[in-house]
Structures are given as structure tokens and as C-alpha cells.
Length: 285
Image (cartoon, rainbow, N blue to C red; front, top):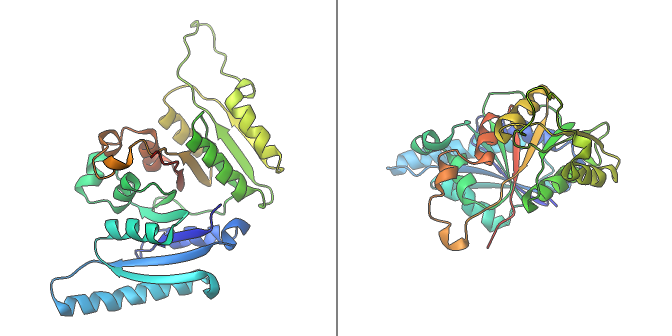
């Protein structure tokens, strides 16, 4: 369940618009929300004072524009490196979901340009909703895509999708399971039948218990590209993807190069999907 949300608000981008859309969903309406704005450390006391005042105004604007229930919202102004502060506050409040903006940078470029979302994505084990800055419009959540496989994190993504959609009228759940290119005769143009895919049919059965309309797809090809293309073709409002934390706790501070360099499926999808991406996490101890 999503009971505690951390909204990292920088004052720019689409995170506030995303939060407004989410507040139309009954599950989110019951959650407590912490709105965080981080003030970077400054050299002089005068600069620090000015930044704190500016940060306070930004935070006040965020609270006002979101029209949140005062009983369920906490405003938090912190000083420090935004990357570290977001992770620390998420742990401090035991957040079930972290909502952040993203410039859509990938791999080495994200590292060199000091991407906050890439850093948090790399080092946090908490579910994250990444909203790219100014690259698409935020629409009401009606059509959600979940990338399915046999992993626990994919099952967690399915559960989140069901909880989000079960109380939304006329919602649709698009379940996709990409498969490697099959070795077929050059004269065989048949596509895989998603209705015969046990991973998809099992997931669909769970969703239908709550009256959620499901659409199944089993495209062939590279998973990242096929998922992103399908999200665009189907005009998806929200993508949900399982992103398992493969590293043991002792290695949390060490680089995971395939993810840092953008080789993982979750990194590819978060960059190229034309809609907000919710990464569900199932940490491995």
C-alpha cells in the first residue's frame, strides 16, 4: 500500500502536475504527503539566508498550488546536497513512494551532469515515480501499462497497478510481456498469442477480480524498445516497471556499472518511455 509519499519539489518541472493528477485516485487521497524542497549549501551567510528565503517561498507555493489537506501534508525545507537529502528523508519518513522530476538523462551523461534522479534511482531501494521535465503533458491516470515477467518486482508492480485502478471508472490495464525473437521460418508471419502466455493470463486473472479491463500484449524484440514503443502507440498515462535491487547491502555505496551506464531495462525505460514511470522495488538483502 502507498501510505507515505515523498514529493521532492524543485520548483520546476512536472512533479506538481503529477501530484495533482494522483490526488484524484482514492488510494493516494488516503496517503500522507511530505513535500520536500532542498536548499543547496552556500559559501556566505548572506547567500545562505537568501537561498533559505527563496526555498521557503518555493515550498509555500507548492503547498498552495497542490491544495492538499493540511491534516495529511508536511512541508519540509532542508539544506544540503539534493541527492543525499532526498534519500535520507525518504528513509527518515519511511516513504512508500518517492516522486521526483527527471531530465531524462541516461548513463554516463547523467553521472557527468550530476543527475539527482539518477543518483536516487541508483542508491535507493524505495519505489520511485519519475516525471520527466517538460517532455510530455501529464494526463489523468486511466490507462496504465505494467511490464510483466516472473520476478517479484513485476508482481509488486501489478499489485500497485491494481490498487491504483480498482477505484477508477473506465480504467484499463495494459499487460506486456516481451519475448526474445523466435527462430521461425521466413514464411511464418504469425505473432505470439498473448492469450496463450501464462505470465500474462495469470496477471490478467488477478486484475479481473477487481473488474479492471485488461489488454494483453506479447511483442517480440528487445524489451526496452518494444515496451517504450507500445507505451507510445497505446497512449499510456503511466508505466509501471519492476526494478529489482540486485546489490547486497554491503555494496550499496559501490557503483553498479550496468545501471550507471544505462544498460539495464529499467534505466532504458525510465529515459525513453513517453509518460511518467513508476519503478517498483523489491530489495534483496
